[in-house]
Length: 414
Image (cartoon, rainbow, N blue to C red; front, side, top):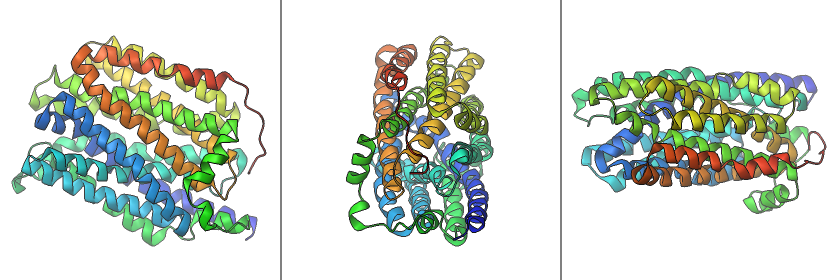
């Protein structure tokens, strides 16, 4: 395949992924904006943390079969499968709320995580055919694509909840129906239009064919273990996600302590919209910096932002505007570690194990976030929201040590 052909496929891929990220981002955020409140209503603050962590666990565990499908069939079917599973999860959450069945709510949130898995793995599809000097920018463009849908969606949650009230579904469950619809739309678009597949095109361009023994995580784990740059990439993504999830999932509950039921959805929508804007709106700038000043420098900058965010949110008390500032900085710190870490990982491993290494990274990231989400509710119940932010900031210390170690140079485009 000629360079011109590859360039054309990459441009088409980026346009399509951008559109589906808008829709998929809306599906993820409109559900997550009310998930903690719905869980707290059914089982209390401690349960809400566990239920939200179930969504993160689902995101992590579903990365395994989706990665295997991607290895065998390409990005198109892997991403489509993730959105289909996420849509099914949205329906299950509504059924669980209707039946007041907490175990079913856990299952629904785990399946709902499939939509987030697809949203996250789309960033890797953006670098399959990217030029080495533009990998950070192309990856960040897809992260930025979630801005429109994800920022608007939490503010649409009250409307979505009222729109389906006539069906008899419980309060706070209606937005999950809209999430399921958004995931279904993204799945249909990708299944029909993501052709030629960017991963399969990259393999043909590199004259690489996937072998069965390369499809699992074991070869990817060996490849990552042999490359310090790849280890730093995975660590940056995982730690950034852990800190973000720990603080973010309990913020709606924190806001619920000082706002009435009639007002809390509106306030949560505004705060989470600003948080998501921090995660995605400046992603193109983060991608440009990643290519210009280096991956490790952006990772260190992200760590600094995460620590400042924890300090801001932890000292905000019930001051909603100040808490919103903290959540916005939290999102920006996550963006730095996510974009720079994902780019560093993708270019540090050979193309034949790249999808498996990326899936491994999402698995580790998801498990780290799930652990944070599971513990966060109990920390808040036992010692308060401020203590949670202190512990989240301390969690960045190992990443600082790893990022400050010299990273040997690696060949571009391996």
